[in-house]
Image (cartoon, rainbow, N blue to C red; front, side, top):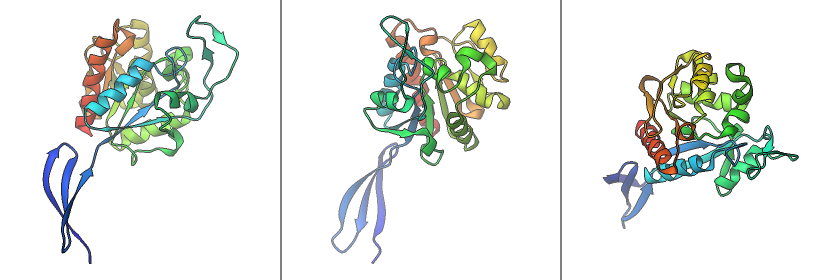
Length: 249
């Protein structure tokens, strides 16, 4: 006998209470949280993901009642920077392995992920976005993009899934989607903005506590530490960005 499922009420976004109808009926709770991908690029501002931005993104996703799904490409970092001295270290590190530090080990290989796995995606910043996910830090608008990052971002855009870009991560979005004329912000740095505009994307100046919304293309961005002076003002922009992608998804 197949059970009948009755939705009794919607208690909050994505959360329902169900009754399963058998002879002796009972109640279970179903959690239907939206899944928001978080693409990481290592661990540490100078050679990976900016840790504050990544953690604030994860916190904002949780506060919005959604579930974060962390992912990163399984590739070597461009290089390793000693974050105490600022000097390059003579060692190699893996982007996926380092990103797992931020994700507390709960992370997916980006190569295995697609738009069917998440409802939206956010790319935190840090130099890893411009060194490991692409080479914008070295090559500007002529940069190459990590193949898995490019594939995933294109697939999300084509599926009309919301995309959030934080700090320097709009450079990745511009390199992949500039031909679609997306609008993004990295704050107000003229040289970086010029590089983004050269990809075909359009840069829009924005304060750290704000976001720029390209509603027709479902792309939202915030400057974060590109202009931010404190973690609290960076958090204001990131929370607005995450709320937007969750509402869109």
